Image (tube, rainbow, N blue to C red; front, side, top):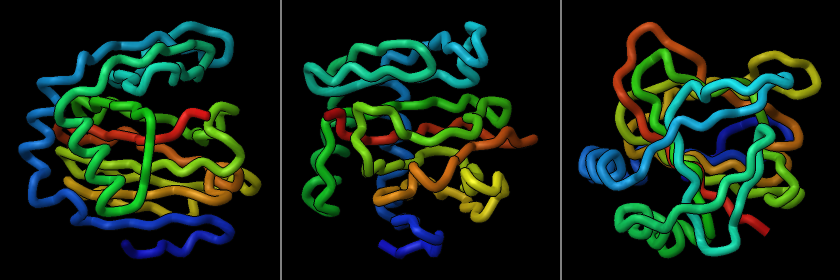
Length: 190
């Protein structure tokens, strides 16, 4: 994994981590995961999430974000295989994953940090991408300006740890032309 220069943060990227199986994993994940359109509370209003999602994890790993509590679905065969491979190949152990399906370039994720209390003070987030290439951006929480953009390749692994969530927001902006993309953000609920 290659370290990415981002002041005060711990960000690493491997463009080819799962590349040899990216298409097969996309198909399996698309088929196995029970995708849902979540309702989120944003600025006091309930709105449909601009993507499809599913919270998956071990028993007791409920997760709360955007004013909603999510109970975990059971691990699917493909997700179990990926989780096990993260542990053995990359020494990254997790008990849950948020799966997101971006149907096309209109689906997106706004600026945020994965800083919910149940993730701990310095969470490690392993983000895997399958399907269309999409741009992932970081901005300083203090200065509110974009400081890094990465085009996430199919089968790529981006790991964010240390003070990354405390110092930076990240997003996946809308784009004019993009096919379907599945993103898995593995995490540990404490």
